[in-house]
Image (cartoon, rainbow, N blue to C red; front, side, top):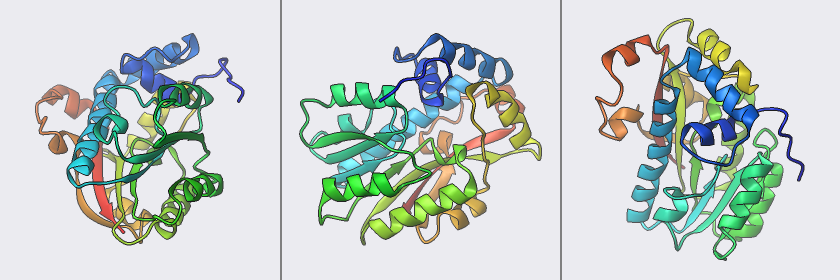
Length: 251
């Protein structure tokens, strides 16, 4: 796998704002540029990470034994493997840095594996998942922190292929960005341009239509999921052109 450290990667930017160490100077510069326009970005990143932890806790309590996680980043402390140590978990990411370090972190866990995958072309990911899970298709899918960086056609295709791959009883956890003002997409994309990505905000209704035939069971702002209504100050919330939501959907 080739690692290009001349261009920032949003996963490594995310790692940096969460206090991680698997990032490069180019990622730190991109993070600084984003925070210059969206000072609350580290708080939104933390909410997203905490939602992963909440989902892991819920899945553990529900006795989940098979997990497919998308755009995983680094499975360090507080990731799904901490909450589901005995589950079979297939992690994935497009970033080779995450894959290389992820493989090292999971080296002594035969029930877990990390693969490189481009979610815009999910066939290789699903082939790896078919090999990993075998005939067991009752799977919990983590799709947290990724679809709002994918064009709608790619998101729709990915989610439909995942639904076809998974069997009855499967569940999906997903986070997305909801616009609060008409110019939300423009403001967000100006902010994240240094990281080389685009953001695609969705209303809850648009998101539900995009992910059909998955059926949305619960959909709420991340601060509500996490019972952190005062995490953002009133000024921070009102100055933000978007809100971050999480949902749980069933097969």
